[in-house]
Image (cartoon, rainbow, N blue to C red; front, side):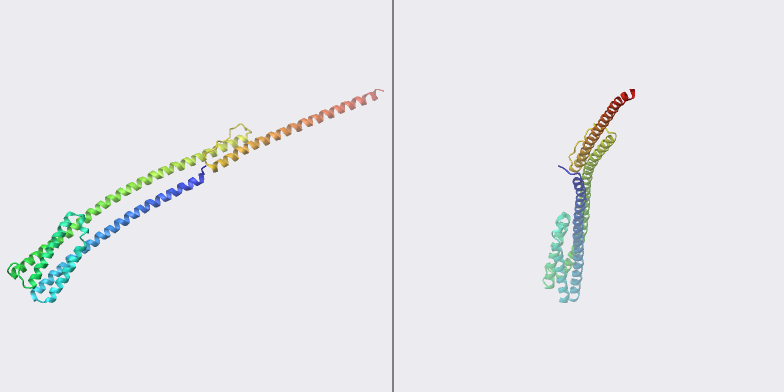
Length: 288
């Protein structure tokens, strides 16, 4: 058998679990978006660091070319290695967009070719047949690398915007789904709760009607029908039993009263009979 109180508590627990569950889902989505945005921004900052390191490497090489001091060449090598390390670490992040992959590959290839030409230039090994032409090619390639790195930065920024737009759409869709499910569950729970309340109220009204009929000494009123809830049935059984016991008690009182009345009537008749007999006995004496 069922218990109204238990089912009501269960409904409230389901509502609480529903809200907690949807809150957990929303928090999980927010956390995923926060982590993804954090990763995207970190990659964006890494590209900026690579561009700054590349500019420093270009400055170091120009100082070497002007002063022929290997100290500046060592600085160039250090900055070049930093650039390649930073960009290589971002290889996986660029796979989300064909445009960023293209600029990434071109930038890495030109960096390597430029570095090869710089190494030959520092060792006084001309590739084009003239060191001055080699320097011009190195400077020209440097300008190209700068342009492609900036294009890579812009392409990655576009990629961030696209991913944010997609994530926003997914988040809105998820919110619509969870809110729709939440509303549907709440409506279902509200209907179930309303049904239980209406059912219990109906039985209370029936019990009130029975008590009013008992007050009118109408014991022919029908018993209250049992429900599927134990706690309400306990109240209904008590009311029905009380009605039957009151009816029986009143019948017993009425029967006892009727017996008392009949007994008093018999006593009165007996007294009248004895009185009449006494009168008959007294009357002859007065005649003589």
